[in-house]
Image (tube, rainbow, N blue to C red; front, side, top):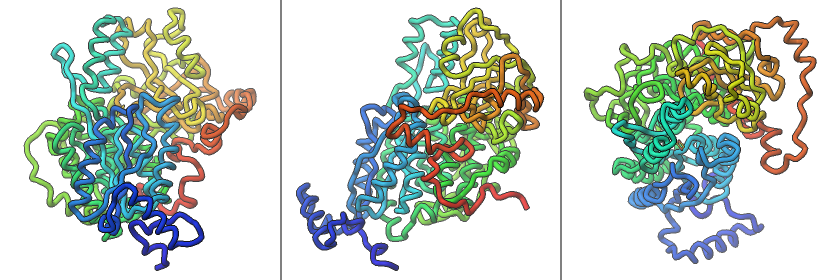
Length: 579
Ligand code: FES
């Protein structure tokens, strides 16, 4: 073992002044300025990544969580030191939160590496924060444990239970369809987010919380407790204590985030009817460790993993109900035969040992038994075809069964601006059966792959009561949204993917049963159109982070990570192909 690898506490990662003794002397002098004693400074240090921000209500309970984590660290004999990183809130991030995810991961990775800490507690919550933190921590290699802020509680509108953000979209669609008036939409706006915390449905935040628990990098039972409950605070305290214990065992992310752990996480993503964003994020986290997620094999898994969790948008309940139903443990128990039970968790025990030690199951209605699912296959299906040679995704559990085998005329929007300009035009040539196609919202196109794949129903059809149409784009969709929506079409149109060649009037065929998405245009005609496509030009005004983003972002099938951040070599494939 080299000298650096045995350094701990304040001696870790000394600032380089050319004299190690002086570097440590100086560091101690400065931190003593904050009132620390020698005793405190001799303890193992647990860094706490603080993502509290006035711009991030989903992390509004960060101060209480930090206090509890600190208590846990000190009870276990460690020294807690919090530090700030970037915080990303979904609706406060321009142009998109996805655009900033990799920046947050770089911030997290470099701050873990730069500052002296023997373990780190990552406090995340809102959609992109947990993946960003896990991507960064995976690369930094310091023992890390994920804590989430937890879901918000639900509200009530005129006697009806509501929660962000499935109901946000449902009420907005009703407003667009003139079913409710401006007064009522203002009224419901006050009730959709009644407390701090993350969205109350199985959106991306809840999905990533469940994925972190399934990966073993969060305390068992840590995903589901709502933000404003005593359970959440107790989990925070135990997270702090666990972080100290992880130091002695050197439980680094690479020991926990193994190929088998990623396979478990994919199973959970499918069984909970999780967000389609979860696939992109898992691909990016795995990519940091040289593990390649194989979309074709994910689809094979999806065919044998039913959706068991009856939460919106695939079902009817909310996160607080999943918590009362026993949390993710109840799900893991049902899919136990499909899991790798020998994967290591932050407790130092295996997933199987944790499941054996979990409280006994009880009668509940939120998590269905394996043989009585709410959807017979996994929530996500992977599509291929001449429109998406690199793959596309549909959240089949939240789609309209009547539209899953569908062939119709395309109505094409060239980009988000074109969509905004024409979608509500009474003269728009669109009919109920048509397929809405939106180009230019991929990783580079928008840029940042906005969650604009949930294309609104044209107003003139919404007024007739149309609630769903087949929609196709190279963008993403919020995990809280539902509909027959084909997403992540790869390669994206901005780099000349086949989606760029589709024209209004072309026929498009979607077959979820065959896992296909095709444009019914001859190869010769598509080749002719490709010839006349304008060559892609670089944005001459791009500088700074935008320039880095545009030159380094990878496509959805590679997790939209920056090419220079992923591991140099992919040494394992997940899920393992069947032999
Ligand atoms: Fe933060 Fe939904 S907006 S979790």
